[in-house]
Image 1 (tube, rainbow, N blue to C red):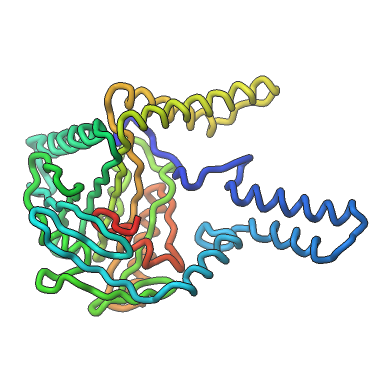
Image 2 (image 1 turned 120 degrees about the horizontal axis):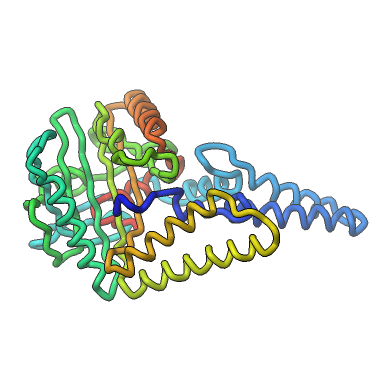
Length: 355
């Protein structure tokens, strides 16, 4: 997460000929079936209906979902259980979290010094965390790191979770209590049941909705990307999850990415077409990443979730509207996770046990 590397759209939203890959496949297949029906003498109306249905499936309807994606999400939502059990089991010095998956993590809480710190300790803490992540990248396997900033009316608290057996950088203290709080568990009761609805989750004391940040390309340069989200007046937890790719694998990934984008650019120019600014910007970002990885920096896969809690569905709707407005004002694009709330809730938990 070097400030020199500009963040853009998520890799999960990769595009082909200007549209998402699944949309391009659906349109091409639909046009092929419809064209075959016309050219082949209009043999069966079912072929034309299938072609039209495939093209219709490529249309975006709501919350960034196409018709085909909405059908898949609805089918999975209808087929899985509505109840999700979240539990925590101490395994000194680590904690095991179970929630549609299992993970063993250690939690550390940042020792805050207040909002105004003129001693430069914030920069030192960030640098120490970057060094610790770079050290994880030197290993032979992918490591998982997550940072959770929980903002309430009482103030903000920051949790760092590392894989079991890791050592926290300086400036962090034991955070098992905060880990349980971020996971929605009380210290005296390490289990909680969640009931999934289409737009939110309901627990014994509140309702929860998880929003995912999917595009950073419009965020202004020179400002903290998620600053506006942490200034909410509601009960909000911003969860940043990082997969720290092992060094040898990271070098292969960035080298292939640079080669692919560079080859696409050369082919485009040889065919007489102009490279778009978006393609040039993507190549610039990948080139920056390759240079940093070659110098020993870590390659991170990033996922950002925002968990909003409220006392009732109406209060939750208001809080989510305020959050989305703040995200849009900061140049971020977000999705509300309709029909995927239980899955996204598990993804945003410390350590990401649902991944």
